[in-house]
Length: 218
Ligand code: PCA
Image (tube, rainbow, N blue to C red; front, side, top):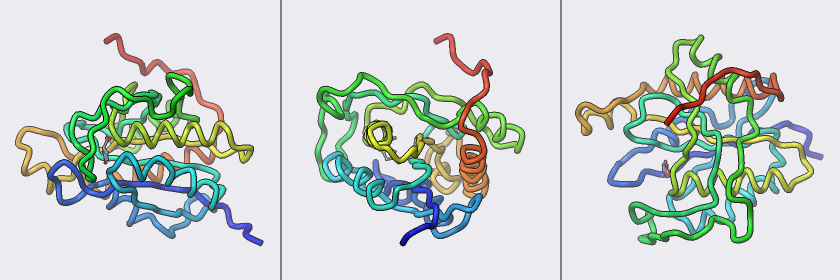
């Protein structure tokens, strides 16, 4: 019988003209490691809407993870973005890696308009900032494949009886990508790995969040 407690950590392949994706690098670095007594199972997703419709739900069924944390690249952002809400909308600005570009369709027909992360985001924000890692709460994960995967993860966890919790973190470009985007922010891989590890530790330690103003006025 499988008794090991696991955490599903997902990342994505490169897309949009990049040759690397920091989310994939983080997942590969943390795969098989132990964090807070939980084994990290790292999986890399294609940047393609159709295959991502089923993959995460299949992996949740297979692994029964205590936590599901999705990672994705958000080029141009300067901080680790703790995504608060997934919207039930796909509006692809660019084609996915399979050449498809769905516009104005729901992620899941008939489902809620939005689903929240079930991680203690404010606690994670404080932990990251105290560790000197730039972080922010984000109120939009976009309308592309990351938002789709975040929505499907939240939907799957809400329906399951397993008590698993989950969320999504967008990460900046790596410095080696940043050299091709002058004037744009980037973050070292080591800081991202430390930040994701801290986010996992904080999520394992606390189910409930704290009240801390971290919203935006626009
Ligand atoms: N970022 C994209 C998809 C894959 C990734 O790493 C996004 O933010 O939707």
